[in-house]
Image 1 (cartoon, rainbow, N blue to C red):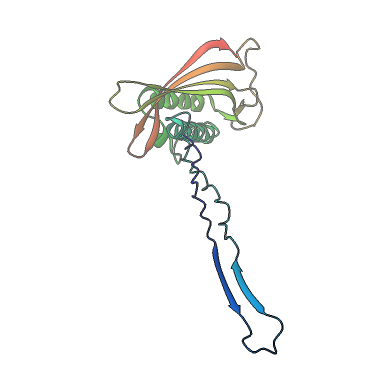
Image 2 (image 1 turned 180 degrees about the vertical axis):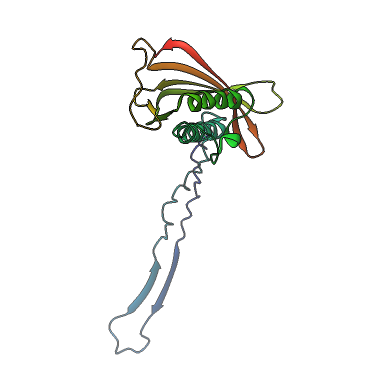
Length: 201
């Protein structure tokens, strides 16, 4: 909130000091007289400058913006870990346990096991757009709901031994909406649930 500009008006004082000293010649030979008058001009103080306005810090329009930024960063990390795990169809050596828990962790481990059984991995990267973060009230822990449009066009299933791309059904959704739930744990935000919606975006 901006504090209204405050004007300090200084009262102007006029000071007039006049002194006259007249020295007259007493001697008869002096025809003139000398008058010495000393005037002190009015002294006017410089115009008072208005004090600089005091501007209080403007609070963020969104009080949850800091939490929202943390959730977005955690979500990016989540997908970074998934990309590494699915590229070798194994979560070993990745931080999957740090970024996911509950059904989200269990589902990913299940999918990775399915890939291993058929000798496939997934290469490339997933693209994201229209990512939105909202928060649930009344939860024991801070809880966020992330809605995202996931684009898997460049995420390819390939044979692990040959590197050949696996043919997939052409009617499958390449861009779909997914909804995730994350909780703020002592070490950061953790995705605990992920639901893929059967809806194109």
